[in-house]
Amino acid sequence: MKLLNNSAKLRSIIVGLFSIFSSQLVAEEPGDSLVWKGVYAFYNNETAQAVEILTEARKNYPLNAAVHFTWATSRWLDSQANDSIEMSHKVLNRDLDTVIPLYKSLVKEYPDKPLYKLYLGSAEGLKARIFLGNKRWFKALIPAYKGFKITKNVADNHPEIKDAQLPIGLVEYYAAIRSTLLKWAATFFGLKTSKEEGLAKIEIAAREGNFAWIEARHLLAFIYLWEAPNYLGALEHAKILSEEFPKSFYFQLLYIESLLKIGKTDNVLEMLKKLDDELTNLTSIQISHFKSYLDYEWALYWFLKDELEKALKYLERGIANYQAELDVFLGNSYLLQGNIYDILDNRSKAKSAYKNCIELDNNSYSVKLAKTYFKTPFQK
Image (cartoon, rainbow, N blue to C red; front, side, top):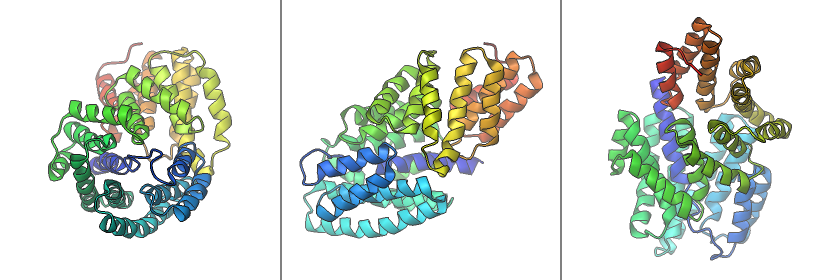
């Protein structure tokens, strides 16, 4: 389990590597507006439409710096929504084998254009995601370092590209608070390890980045909700994401979670009912992932309303049917289940739920709390 969770943190680093890919997506290059249209489509859960838009953009604007990488990313996200994990890895690998040689050629032909180098580094780094998907953790470090070296070179020589702060900050943050493996990886990358400086860099990307602001705000909302609690910070970022991408089921979940964590339940019931309706519009694979996430949010809502039996029913269903790769919702479900059983004075069931949370060993804040409540009962 420890090795699995180290891989999850490495995966977060790789996400940072490729999330900077559109650092200059402003209307400066022919085709940028069409690329942006595709970007908004895939963040709004319209992945098939995104693939169609970006395939057209790639055909009509082959010299656009963002288009090839964005196209590959959209096809990967579309495959994730419709295919098995193994198939999505194959799609990504095949497409990267297509775009990486293209970027190498563009870098050679246009050596003074840093965006081609940036996208080449992002594509090389994204190769590591395939190894992570196949649980080949150490092998993932090779393409990760290869891509990171290129992107860091761009960042060092072009400080005006604020998006490059995201992957650097992400590595610094996780290496500072996580395992020896990540500290070694950060040293390997030539980076220091500082939680505060890492978060500060991600905040720069969130507030000043041209495109990385999307992933930067997403990652900050995630970190502030479930790793380093800062619920008002999470609310700020999640609210912006939910407004910019109203069709993103996941961003809406982040926003709801942020509201509930600061005790704001006004309008949340209507928001949850809306997501219940929208769930039916997702693909079967997406439903299998997001249903348990939504069950947890319902449980948290009813918990705050002191409807403990209703909350338990949602938790039991969500836990029993949990199929998502990301286990942070599962850990929080176990934690909340334990809290409720403590309130109901059923200490044996509470300790069992806390034990399940602890055994996930995903280094989330829920695990830390579960260890506390396993020794000392939760009191509301």
